Amino acid sequence: MDSLFKFLFFKKLKYEKHQFSTQRRHFLSINQSNQFFKHDNYHQI
Image (cartoon, rainbow, N blue to C red; front, side):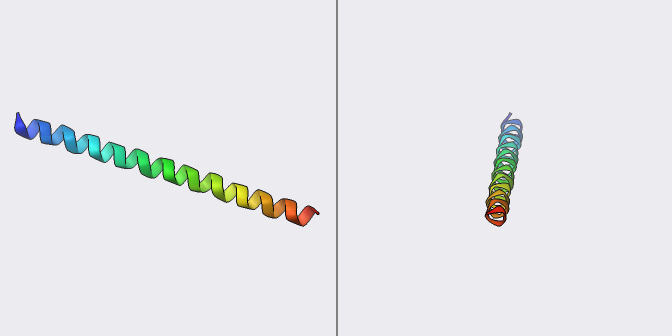
């Protein structure tokens, strides 16, 4: 019972960590594209 609980707990932890890093990567890519977009607009002026 105890080992099962630990197993699930770590699984959940791993999953959340993964979700977090995915979201973070997504956020960074959005940020980069915004930077690129601003840069592009700057050149058009």
